[in-house]
Image: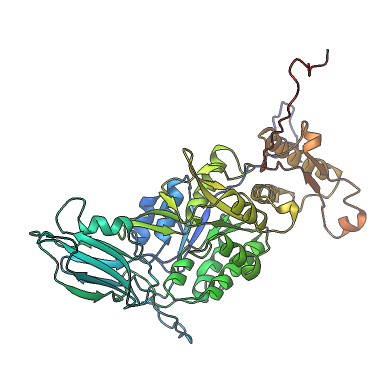
Length: 518
């Protein structure tokens, strides 16, 4: 208390009864995977694509991380953290590995004259796919024409007759790239139009790209260690993260570096990390190439995830891959994380991040019917669907929890937002005198914040009393708790739920009969 010695007027500043709470960020993603350059195992803040390329380089063949981050920013994502995994070749004293998984390699390729053939399946074995050039069929073919046979395990799978190197409809590159399911062709040199020589060449595995930071990967590279600040375990020190994506887990699986059991082990560790932190959600990617029945069986019988801190999106999406110059399918997690950020900025975290167009996507791996969707949605598989005239949209907003209270993704994210905001905005309470005056200040502070959330549409109810309650009094704080140094404040909120099923009921009635009460 100040002392007053001389007569006069004094002006003093006093603390307000309630201290406002500022909402925390809700859409800050973390990406873990392979990059061209940059620091190893160090969470690095990236705010735009230019910063990413300046720190970690551009697109890399055999890696999905750069494409995922690019899709994140394209779809409205803001800040994110990037963790480059692998072994730093310049680091000393690193422990030797006991196991040595397969090296990450690009898809098998072959040089055929001025053309380069590349297998569309990166996991294809060397020599399994071959390309044969033979004489064309038909009567009196042109001298520059030839026939292309694409074989798999010695069996002819695809045939392209009357092909030529000249421009036009019969151009071999145009014909093959338009319909082939096994290979892609590109012209690596120019010159006079000529006929390719008759020969059969098998596609062989090229040397591993120098850009890939680590030729050997295991589950430990992704999970990491908290003490060493490696993998996504290093993200425990970054409190701002709310989403976790590991797209390069699937690139390693596709290229044979890890098996499906290892994929499940890493995803289980992702879920455990998010549950431990309590303020973030893991966006899981499904294995590639699954149809509706296979993804359901994998989700229910194999993976068996059950967590309110995880969500799964299927199928894969098709985008342009600048590293290869052609369209390719990638995991959807990065683009979905961007949609979450865009949704939070435009509508709020209480709005389910669904029925939103995915930007930068050309196609999806498989189109499903409503009956197939009926099987997947109850299992927590959020489908990505293509609608005529409405683009490609996210059509699901569920977690992987079996608890109906935490079924919807927006409910879990809303509670994460409320909990983190209250946690960060009430530190001033610590060591204050534990009396009724303090309890009243806590009630006013929390109530003022929840009223704002109710007015923004995050809480259900026509009045604040219907939307939430805050109880901090002598009932929640008995003498035993006060003696133990505790202040207990009970908060109850009624979150809004998404209108997942919209039902219109039509009935037939006889004409002339009034349905209006007179």
